Length: 372
Image (tube, rainbow, N blue to C red):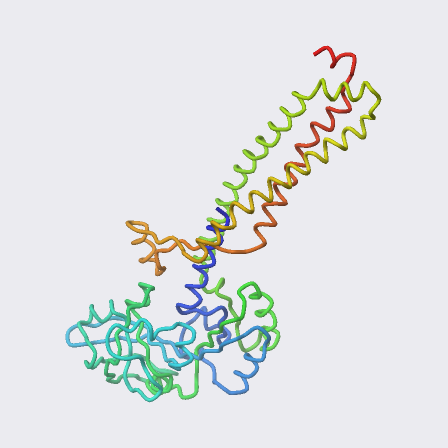
């Protein structure tokens, strides 16, 4: 159960990170609270070098993002224009694999790529010309015509309905913001190192000019959903531990009750109660270890199978996941940590339950228990 739960969290995080946000983003100070081009910053090779030199960062992707009105014939819609470096962006979001019509952007293209839902609403197809109108950097007017090079089926519904991708240099020219960016999106080697890498990056860039935000800060709602679900999962585990604890205690209770006369005889013939209690404690320890090893041996093949072959969901559950932008699968996690954690909890429960037979040994009265 824990493998399924943690696997789902890992998959959701990975999907969000690779759909758009990255693990970490760098903006000009104040940009996240007021997303305007006036809060953009000047791109430079030295800044990229400073970011990329932080241990753990594996990819740095530049972007220029702003809003615009997209029009085709009588249809108009507010959209998000994202200026990108196509090869770098593709390493982060893998957008080229979502092309359903046309071809993915290349550095020399003058056109745009947009989501399938947005294209359907506007009634456009590959080869049509899209009109974009907006306000550029420091109040400059922005209006131009862009041919449509590609239509994408983006898994995230919000992006599919409102995102238009354009070559970074064309976006800077369109918004009269040459050499400026609104963000750097980054991937790191391991999500487990997120806080360490973020702290190092904040120290490297300083707090005066830039704000460094993790995916947890960028996607607060998702983080809260994971935390809430995790608490409910831990509550279910606690109930299971109670069931297991009573099962172990019941086994030990029966063991000591059925052997009361046997133990009384051993005490009567001269065996010290301390040694007898040690023997019973060792017996409980061996039974517990055998149970733990058997449990791991029984669970590991199942976890391994579903780790490599995730469960595909169907019906309304699948539809709900697709609407949230996730593939309808239930993956499993393969981590040694939760094997150790579960084993330690069960071991502690068994050792606490073992106090009863140990105490019972010291309370044996041969003259009384031999008559039972």
